[in-house]
Amino acid sequence: MSRVVLITGAGGGIGSITATQFAQAGDTVIVSDINAESASAVALALCEAAGDPTRAIALPADVSDRGSVEALFDNIRERFGRLDCAFNNAGIGGGGAPLLDTDDAIWDACVSINLNGTYHCLKQEVALMLENGGGAIVNNCSILGVNGGANAAYTATKHGIAGLTKSVAVAYSGQGVRCNAVCPGLIDAGLGSRTVQAGGAKADAFIKLHPIGRPGTGEEVAQAVRWLCSPEASFVTGDLLMVDGGYSAR
Ligand code: NAD
Image (cartoon, rainbow, N blue to C red; front, side, top):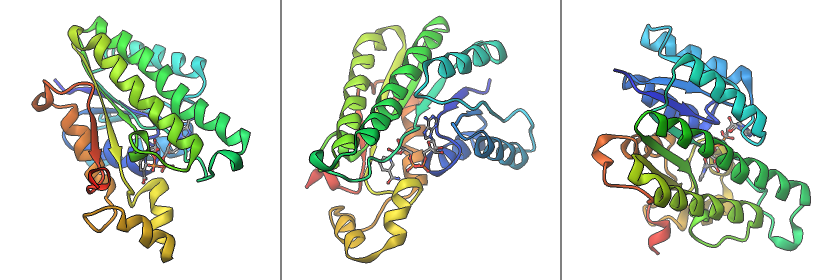
């Protein structure tokens, strides 16, 4: 039986690439995003590529809005009655500003989307997975969820996601819900592609912090997510998997 997989922020970037890999592997993918149009386009493309109109479905939601996430899960319960895997990927950058230059509106947006959004989704996902004997959850964290960074709002909210990942793993792994995070370095997809494509000294300096000598790809993050969701990772929970070309090993 094909697994039911929810991916938030799947209308573009790392989320849509991960949705593509799950769909190609035969899973049924719920493509969720605040942007209904991009979510629909991704879901349609996945169905067409599979030659199967049920391979993916677009269910838009704003993860920062508790009511919107509850409505998303009412929909998932009604249509599927279960959820096997979830990738909590929706997120925004913090604009790069250090504390004293942090715009309060950006701080609030990062807390609402990155941290509260992950919290709202986890609450619904864990509850539904527990009803069906378990599941696997992966949160999209960052190298800045583990290492310090001047970018105050992003670093703080990604550290929050790292803590939440471990907390959920400690509380629910015994009941069959594994919860892990991927911590990507600079990725040439989504937010990171703007830095990579801009090039110049700033991009070069950032890339040099990755001992492997290049940015990662969205596909490399997606492969890590899929592994964490697979039976091969059955004893892995509460882990923050660095997908960062050695950034954190320095
Ligand atoms: P992206 O901007 O392409 O993707 C983010 C997606 O989230 C977009 O489709 C956007 O519409 C959606 N989104 C934004 N706010 C939302 C909300 N309130 N509710 C639902 N969806 C919402 O960027 P990306 O780089 O693919 O980012 C995906 C995740 O990867 C983020 O959590 C980001 O922090 C993380 N990440 C990215 C990199 C990188 O270099 N690209 C590195 C580390 C971590």
